[in-house]
Amino acid sequence: MILQQLVNGLTLGSLYALIALGYTMVYGVLLMINFAHSEIFMSGAFISLLVYQRLIPWLSPSEAWLVAIVLAFGGSALLALVVERFAYRPLRRSSRLTPLISAIGVSILLQNAGFLFISDQSLAYPQVFEIRHYQWGGVEINSLQILILVVSLGLMGILHLFVNRTRLGTAIRATAQDSTTASLMGIPVNGIIALTFLLGGALGGVAGALNGLYYGSIKYNMGFIPGIKAFTAAVLGGIGNIPGAMWGGIILGVLESLAAGLIPNGSEWKDVIAFSILILILLFRPEGLFGRHVPEKL
Amino acid sequence: MNRYGRHGAWAASLSFFLIIPFFLDGSRFAYLIRLGGIAGLYMLLALGLNLVVGFVGLLDLGFMAFYAIGAYTAALLAIMKMPFWVCAAAAMVVAMAARLAVGFPALRLRGDYLAIVTLGFGEVVRLIFTNWDALTNGPKGLPRVGESIPPISLFGFTFTSNLHYYYLIAVCVLAAAWVCYRLDHSRLGRAWVAIREDEIAAELMGVDVTKQKLVAFGISALFAGLAGAIFVHWENFVTPESFTFWESALLVCAVVLGGMGSVSGVMLGAFCIVAVPEFLRDLLGKSFADARYLLFGLSLILIAIYRPQGLVPSRRRSLELHPAEPEENAPSTLFDVEGK
Image (cartoon, rainbow over all chains, first blue to last red; front, side, top):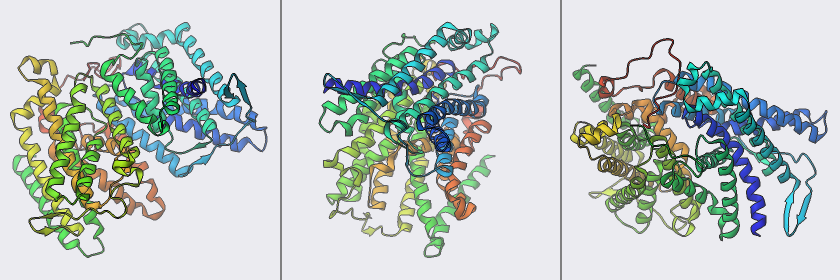
């Protein structure tokens, strides 16, 4: 029973981790909570579904979905870039509140765009391949969960290598550490900020497509709860900390699944538990589980 | 605007909003009265939130939680046939108690973390009201079948029509605006602004920062509790769905749109977030009615970019010393990095 919940929690947690990376990277370079990230996630789900429906007459379902998820990856990245360019970049020098207002505006705009131009109802997300169930020592895992784990852990691994082993990754880390100095060292800070949005958006979009596949339906307001939970995951791991976001997502997913499975009526209360974790972490260990404690500058 | 101009604007808009509804009653524009009442409730909430966001400079993304707590407290008492003033007083007290209980541990936090804690708390409150069926009847809302919330009656007068509630709300809004205005010009208000501008300096100058923040929290919750109590008596119905995160976000937008820290500005902002989508609905006609929130989101972005000080900037804020504009070709860097 517990093992079964662990498997479900890992699946859920890897999705949270994928979304959380977008929050954490943007916070790392801009110290800004990108509220519209949950809508980027939603857009990934919609892009993949629309592409899939277009391609289905010509390709086999699994091929069509492969193209769809690649386009969700690219499309969401583009959308995140556009949002950054038009809604956040003009506000670089404003107070902390103003970008947040702008982000809420973007969020409302994108949700209503989905609501108006695509559908105001839940859309069924097709099952793109035969789902096989594997029993192993009383624990059941299906091929869909395996797919989600492989894709999300793979993407996270690639991101980790990218940030730590490439020149661009070094530039991202330098910008996060001290953007003024980074720009003096010849790093194009604006471009790097755009790059973090692009990476975060791409991962968020894939997470949206996988989420649609996993739950079998998508809706214009589907981003909100996963978005907040992914943010919780990012905070749990120490916001601005990339491995932290991955661990935070997985821990949160597992905790939520265990709570849903072990507490009577747990599934009703699982969101309360997630939000309570968020509040408690922020109150008692705001630097997160893996963050370093940074004393506030006076 | 000089002093007389401001007083004149206040007087003109006041008389407009107090006299016009009286003539609208019974005409085909009667729905505007209800709309005005809703705008009034939002004004109450926005004025309360402004104390925390505009004066003390602490962002709160879960303010609707206290509106919800007030509404549910009042509903539960009203179902037990308590008179309105008891319900309202209890709603205000309970909302304030909850506010202080959450506010106290959260005071140590940096600005954006505080925002997220309040967001989390707002969601937790909504979910508890949704799931605790025994107390709140869950998503089906209160009152349950067979119960009812009696209409408000004060001094032997029973409030029945929208017009009555409109005037009740108008009186509350005016009282709240007056309180805010007086606070703004008192020791308290100055202490809050000092905290907003530079917490450490304020502490060194002898402002008891923790206490003042808690006072601001407490007073803001009183407004929310009162608004909740009136809301529930007027609607005769309350469900957790009225208190989503979007509502809280819209309130923050109202405060920022209007002009943080400016009493009349915040009231204008609250009026805008209620009225603009409605006007757009009439303006766009049937086919585009659904597009109004799309335009609303767009206008939020545009206002954040082109007029971040709000529609009616607070005079004190515009007089404050602001850092000089960086040079033209300075590297564009982050927002101010201090934990404000």
